[in-house]
Every structure is written in C-alpha cells, then in structure tokens.
Length: 170
Image 1 (cartoon, rainbow, N blue to C red):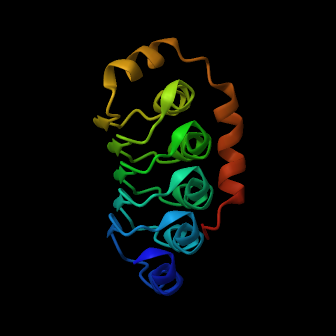
Image 2 (image 1 turned 90 degrees about the vertical axis):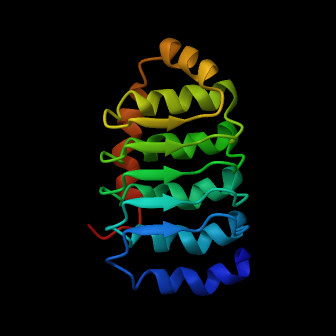
C-alpha cells in the first residue's frame, strides 16, 4: 500500500462507519501514510480491532494516529508491534491509550520503548483496568517500570486535551 496508496484508502475508510475490524499490517504506511490513515481511523467509531503492526510508523506516525484513538471507545484489540515508536512515539500513544476504555488486548512488542517509553506506557496502563492480554516484548523490564512509575498526574491532564484535539465527531 505505502504512503501513496494511503491517499486513496484513507478517504475510502471514512465511508465504513460500521467497520468493526481493520488490519493494515505490513503495508509500509510510514509517517507519510499516517497523515491520511489517522484521520480516517477517527471516523471508524465501531472498530473493535485495529492492527497497524509492521508499518514503519515511528514517532512521526504516532502524531497522526494517536488523536484518532481517542475516538475509538469500542476498541478492544490494538496492535502497534514492530513499529519502532521509541520513547518519542510513546509520548503520543500514552495519553491516547487512556482513552481506550474497552481495550482488553494491547501489543507494543518490538517498538523500541526503552526506559522512558516504558514509563509512559506504564502510566497509561495504570488507568486501563480491562487489559487482560499485554505484549510488550521485554515484559520483565516493563513490570519493573510499572512498579516504579510516577503518579502520572500529567496523563490525567493530557487526556481531555487529546480528546478535544482529535478529529472524531462524537
């Protein structure tokens, strides 16, 4: 698909209001493609499963996809694996994750979270009580981060801002 195909798929996705599962894995979307896919995902408010794995999103792609996540109240499964989000991408994904109140499965494996990204994700996880299946690759490291995570007051303040800045029509 690549970024070029996203120019056409993005607008087409906005017409699928009843879509419940979207698998865009292994499409080399990159940050450029996320510019088209992110706003389209925000319109898919019936989504219960979203797979964006193996798409070279990086931190830049997270800037376009994260606001859309705030619109997905029914989302139960989210896969961001193998995207090298890094700590910078986690700064966008973290607050967005706290908006996903129905999320039960989260895969952030092989995303290069590092210590700073792990702490960001840990803060979000503390507010996500329904998660039953969590794949972070280095789970031992992440569990240590969870235990040592700060109070995360900043996320409680960032969450309303994220919802206001999103492109969803709720």
